[in-house]
Length: 133
View 1 (cartoon, rainbow, N blue to C red):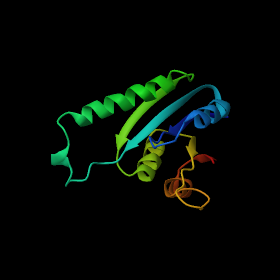
View 2: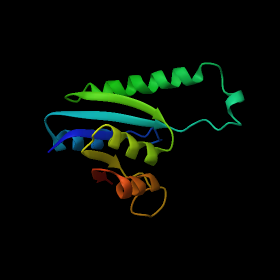
View 3: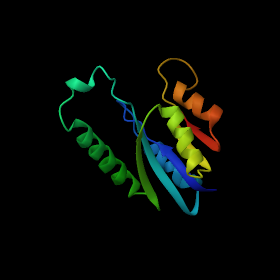
View 4: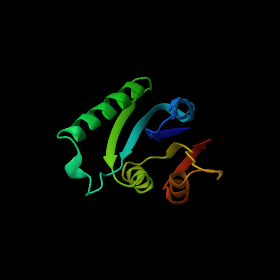
């Protein structure tokens, strides 16, 4: 049983985080903290001028609201939203925050066993990683 679980949430078409949340609940020790993390891709420099004013704040708030709604279904659920490369930021956040287990869905775009983000997290994570296919 784990005391500090990180559940990265990807907002992609057709993705549903229920399996990850259920796995985190089952892996959690009594009193464990479960943090839902979303890593936003940075907007490419060439596109920034074409984005409507305030879009970033609206998007961040919508993501935080959705994550909080999901976190409210968990005992000791917390929310974090950061920006950068998903695999790198997941690994860094886990190390900086004393995470002892990452529960991660394996989003894949081809016939590989799991996607590139999951592969990099598994390889470099400073803690246990529980993959869901």
